[in-house]
Image (tube, rainbow, N blue to C red):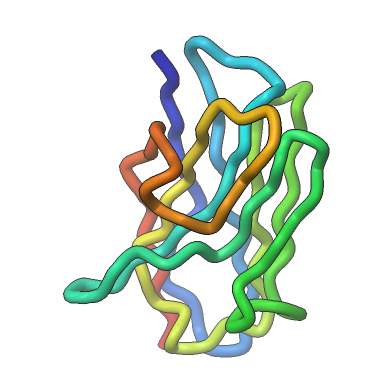
Length: 123
């Protein structure tokens, strides 16, 4: 059983910076595809960034150049640094993972493990 716990969400002014963290515990390993998703009430969950087991990172177009995802396998932690935040970045942000030796798609249905989320509000 895998547990994911996000932290770092809060209210911030437009143009500001915020860093989210996600700690992985339980039946862990380094063969995990991990990602950040976000969701606004009434809309589908949207992939923000995926990080595959080799460290290759892919971003959704809306955050390219502003968000930086990273993972520290020694600490079993995934990060999301968010710069130049915009009001449209307001959402609940979820950390997700799934055991994968290869693909790491930006698809909510692919991921088996989800954290409870951390709220980011940009005004």
